Amino acid sequence: MEELGMSSEEYSMFGSILPIGAMVGSTSCGRAADLIGRKGTMKMSSIISIAGWLIIYLSLGPLSLDVGRFLTGYGIGVNSYVVPVFIAEITPTHLRGALLTVHQVAISTGLLVAYTVGAFVSWRTLALTGMIPCAVMILGLYFIPDSPRWLAMVGCQAEFNAALQKLRGDTADVSREEAAIEESLVTLQHLPKATVLDLFLERNLRLVIIGVGLMVFQQFSGYNGVVFYANQIFTSAGVPPNVGSILYACLQIIVLSLGAVIIDKAGRRPLLMISASGMLLGSLLTGASFGLKEHALVSDMGPMFTIIGIMIYMGSYCLGLGGIPWIVMSEIFPLHIKGIAGSLVTLVSWGGSWVVSFTFSFLMDWNSYGTFLMFAIFCVVAIVFIWKLVPETKGRTLEEIQASME
Image 1 (tube, rainbow, N blue to C red):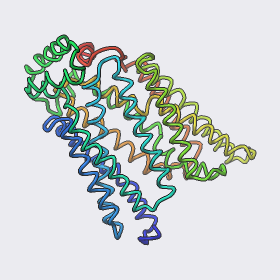
Image 2: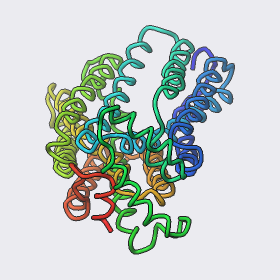
Image 3: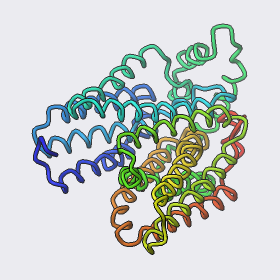
């Protein structure tokens, strides 16, 4: 802001335009992944992200900053769909949940690195560091095969066999897995090309409700708003914002690492239920502390009480609702509607992220403890939704999951 003479409004626009870019990316990610493959789509998003970071680095004013931020948002929106889908499609059944959770651990590690590096370097240097993982991804993708399921779907039989064998090991017997994938594709090939209207057919509607519903609760339970406000909460408790951000990123990594170890044993549904319950507790604690402060009933321990609530909330989010909706999304949709349905689910997630981030400060000005009570209500509804509708997918192949849903 100081270097470029930006106003608060211009800075707010710079911050809020990333989820808008991600929303645009989400509308094209499914089709791109179906047309040019999972690897091709990840390469495309990395190149676009590099362009965005470079524009930010070279920026001389707010407009170019916003363009760069929009492009990085676009890349993030695409990757938030295609990466979990790719991992789900290449991974053995008994490791799928763990490796999809490791993806979330990697995101949190990236946050920790960014917070740590950002505390010591200029914003332009920080933008340059954003290009490094993009470049590593482009290079790394040359050494791994594409999704066998996508290769089979587009009729590349020889590449399908070779990719599956390479992923499972040269001496592994992949005949049963090949047969299961090919059998599921035979059924899909008799269906007409999927359109948006197919999402509302009876056989698909429940899947869409589950995928979209989980993303609605992921976002409207308020996480992005809490993160937006976290620095002010840390400051009120006497904790430097940079230190608070680093502590929070460390908490994320610890909780997500625990999740990666237990998800394929405990299952998706129990972790989602525990996560929503913990977020409910964290929201109530935080809301109560704001309410006591507003009515002058709080002691000097009030800010620390708020931080405890926020940390319970954030830790619970990381355990379940932060990452598992993306895991479930990558597992439940059949191949022929996965692109369209995945785009819709991703769009809902990033749209909700923007709405919550944009409205949170207004809600806090209106009624701070009422805001957290509202988030608590969403957590209660999420618990009921998960209990009633969300299937358990651990220990089953993607084809078995989709057959059971039908």
